[in-house]
Length: 72
Image 1 (spheres, rainbow, N blue to C red):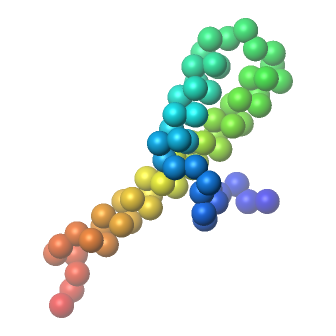
Image 2: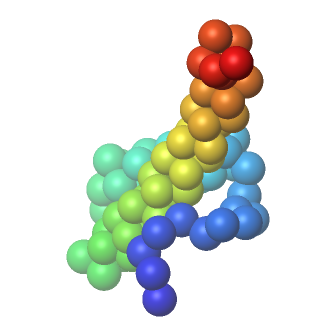
Image 3: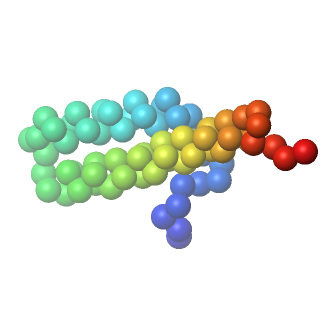
């Protein structure tokens, strides 16, 4: 399985960002076992990749729509 973000994300950017913020809060609060912390950290990495995927797609769309970037 690839570590890249999925082509068709099941979460919106806002949902992924909110879940990522919750993961960070839980990790910062402490009181978790090592295994729980690692599991949360791994989920956080997945969510960060998904957020980056959404941002990259938005940047591509903006670049494609920007006037003056087209030749003609």
